[in-house]
Length: 143
Image (cartoon, rainbow, N blue to C red; front, top):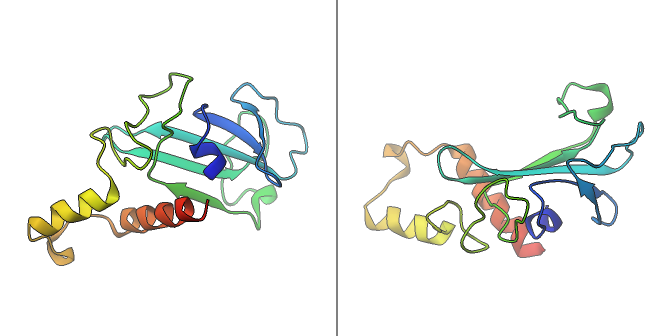
């Protein structure tokens, strides 16, 4: 995940052992991809960035968790884009830790909500989104 977030391709394949870039969307996935990661980043219609990484199973195929070759593997998602993006797929964030196109960071979002007397009980914020943001901060802190 960290290698992809620092990379310049919105769709990329990585060696799952040492995280080296294998190629972009045009990279031909071998018949037996082994420990190959597929990472995708984009800007959602809501103005927030999303990145997900998963194990590659075959060329031009996104795996489903019920797929036989996917058993025992995992995926990871964070709400960050790639500030070094160069393929033109989406507008990159203005700063590395921006969650959305406005450049808002997680800390700024929390502070704005606190100042507005925000409470979890009255919020329409999805608990999964909060977990993804927390996970992404953890991933970035260990990279």
